[in-house]
Length: 340
Image 1 (cartoon, one colour):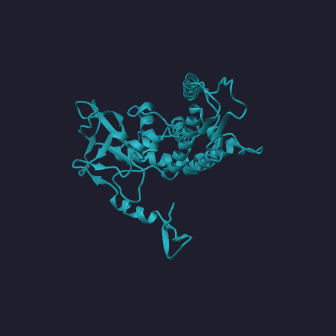
Image 2 (tube, rainbow, N blue to C red):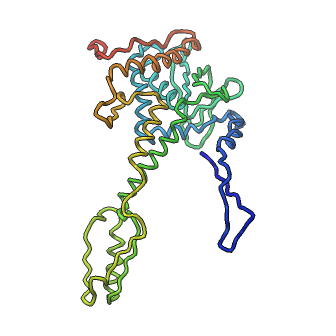
Image 3 (cartoon, one colour):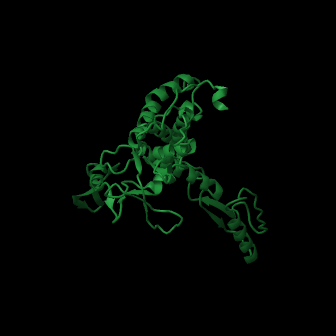
C-alpha cells in the first residue's frame, strides 16, 4: 500500500489551482514502529502480539482459509497414534489451536502420588504467559475477564516469531488481508441482492396524480426493498401520457464490483499462504486441463509441509520427557483394520 501526498504548486491562475502528486510512500515505513512494541505487559501477563480473538474469528471469514487449516489437521489426525496419556480428542484440540493461533498448551493431570494420568489441551485463545514461566487463563467459568493462575507445569508449543519469543504466531498472516477482502466482497454481494434496490433512482411524475395515489405509490416503493422486491407495480394515471412518469437512475443498475476476479485472486493468495494444493480442497479448476494428479500433489504436500509440521509437534516429547506424540506413515489407501 502506498500513501500519496498532494503537493501544491506556487502558481495559481485564474482558471484554477494546479497541483501534482508527490512521490509514493510505502505504509511499511509507518508500521515499523508497531513491530518494536511486540508484546505488552498487562500487569500479570504479556498480551500476545496479534489479537487471538481476531485470528479465531477470521477462521470462518473465508472458506479457503478454513479448509486449508482443516486439511492439515485431518491429515495429522489420520497419521497420529493415540497414546494412553494423550487421547485423540486432546490432540485434535492441540493441533487446531496450534494451526489457527500459532500456540498450543498441554497441562498434565496428576494423581495423588504425583504420576501423570493424562495430558489436557488448554484453550490457546484464552491462555496468557507471565514473567516467571507462569500461565494465566482469562475465561474460566465466567465471562467477566477474570484471571485464573494455572497451577502446575504448562508445556507451551510455539510457532516461531521473528519479533519475540513469548508467543507464537501462525504462518498464514500474509494471507489474512486476502481472506478479509474475499469476505467483504461476499458480504457486499449478499447485501446487494437482499436489498433488491441495487441502485438509487428518481421517480419523476409530471401528470396529475391525487394525494391518495401518491401516498399509495410511495408506500409500495418502500415495500419493494428487501425480500420480495422483484414484483410488478401498477400505476393508474388517467390524465397522463407516456412521458408523465419517468424513472431516472442515478447510479449503475448492475454491480460492477469485480466480484469474480476478487474471489479468484484472493483464493490464490490464501492457498499460497497456506501452501496447500487446490486439489485437496475441492477447488474446481477453471481450465480443461485441471490441476493435475491429486495423488502426486498430496504426496508432495505431505513431504514438504506435513512432515516438518509433525517434527515440530514432536518437540513436545522432549518437553514432557516421554514420547506421547507419534505418527504413522501417510497412505492414500484405506486399511479396514485402521478404520475399525
